[in-house]
Structures are given as C-alpha cells and as structure tokens.
Image (cartoon, rainbow, N blue to C red; front, side, top):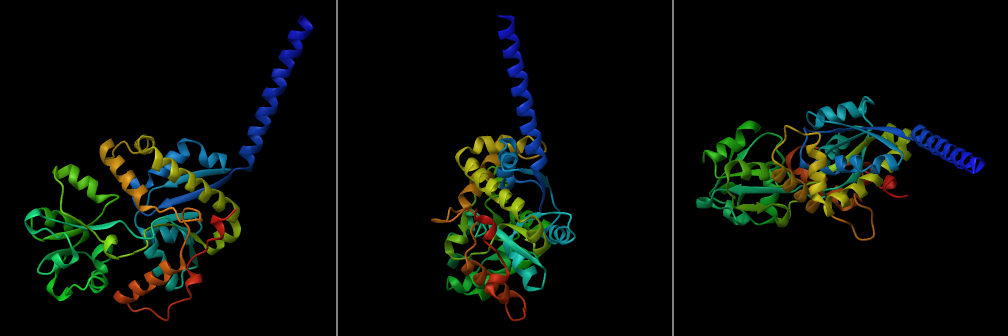
Length: 330
C-alpha cells in the first residue's frame, strides 16, 4: 500500500511538473503585441477587454498590451516609430495617411460604415435627409460626420446650399446644440449618443447616416509595413482572437460591460457602457464566407472618393496599397 501511495504521489508530482513545463513553454512562445487605441476608453473597445479577461489572447499565444490614445495622428506616429505593433482607429484616417505616403496598411476593418447619426430637437426634427434643408448644423474642422455633408447631400438629392454649417471647436458642438444654438449635431451611436441621452434624460430624433448611404470606414486595425513583415504571425493570432472576442461580446454584452468596467472605474454607468457595446456589435458585420474584419476593396475605393471630395489629393494609389487581408486567413 505504501508503495502504491508513493507511486501515486510520484505520478502526481510528475504530472504537475509536466503541466508546469507546458505552461512555461507556452509562456515562452507567447509574443507581446502592443496595441494603442486612438482615443480614451469607450464601449467600442469592450470586446478587447472581454477577450483578455477570458484568456482568448493568451490561448492564441499573444501577450496583449492595450493602451489609451490621444488622437489618430498620435497613434499613427507611435506606430511608425515602432512603439506599437497595431493601432485601433477610424479607417478613413488610415486611408488618408497612406495616400500621403505613410508606410502602413489596414489589416482588419470592423466598421466598413462608421456608425454616425445626426440628432436634432423634437420641434425641429431631422428624420430624413431632406429635413436638413433650412436647418443649422454644428461643424468642427476634421469632424467626421459633417466633413462629408456635401457627399451625403448628393447621395440623397438634398440642396446643401440650404443647410447652414456653423463652424466651432469640437468641444462646443454638443453644448451649442443642447442650448439650441444649432438645430442638429453629428454623433457616434457607439459612443456619444448613449452618454448624451443618459445625461439629458431624453431621446433625440435620430437620423442614421449610414442608412442613407454615407459609408465612411470606421474602426480598423492598422499595422506598419515593417511590423507586418516582422510580426505577421503574432498579428494574425491577435486578429483571430479579436474575431472570437467580438462574437463573445455580441452574445454576452453584460460580460463585456463588466470586463470594460473593471479597467474603467471612472466611466459612465453600466447601462451606458452596455448600450455602447451593443451598438458596437451591431456596427460590426459578419461577411458571408469571410472572417470578421475582412476588407472589401470597394470600401477603400469609395473612401478615396469621399476624401477627394473634401481635400486635394494626388492621383489615388491603387486600392491594394491600402490594405491586406492576408493576416485574416489561417
């Protein structure tokens, strides 16, 4: 009996040692992937933290390091300097930067259409694009929603000359709208709208710009050409884990809310964060027969036309210069 007990104990010790060796081996094989957001924490980023909490990145062989940002330009700068392996930012900014010569590529596009909406006051409701005629709308330089208003008008046969764009700094847009100094303001359904409606305690008439044809590439994963060459396998694993995390957040928004809240104690209420997460899930399509994040060349070509409608660009680069789907395939 003693011999049997000793044998069992020895087997247990051996099994524990083997498991420890396996874990150490997996840890040694895990590769750091440094990711920078283009902005501060918000519900759009919830699936990353859910995936991290559930071990999806670890299981994929990735040690994920997430960091908040201070704008798309700063995020792209840190990417080019090699401080980050990937950045999360609106795809339209990456396309513009690539056209200007920046050696980067979009490696996943989660929002082919930015979830933009125009909100208005009930007494001057903008329910259809035509309702914009005769209205005033807040506008800030570089602000996505109204920068492409002319294109939106053209798509929807609206006379843009009958819309008054009131230019102001970005921080003044919403306060000016709330004070009824302007009739409408653009917001992100995945960020601003839930916060605003919770703060004010009312629903606003909301015009979904994507439903009326405005397709501005939104949340994207961007990597440098050098980073793709050097860390392609790790980036591929990161994107595969992202796809799992996105589906997990879609099916369990409460868990995604809790995961994000654990690192965002100063954030809004659980209800607002959950609304942001649910709106984000709704904005991320699942392409038929393709991985989540798959980039359609037409989305790039259309975005180049949009950019060309508001700024002078040289001859557009070939669409293939702006993206690669190679890291989305196994």
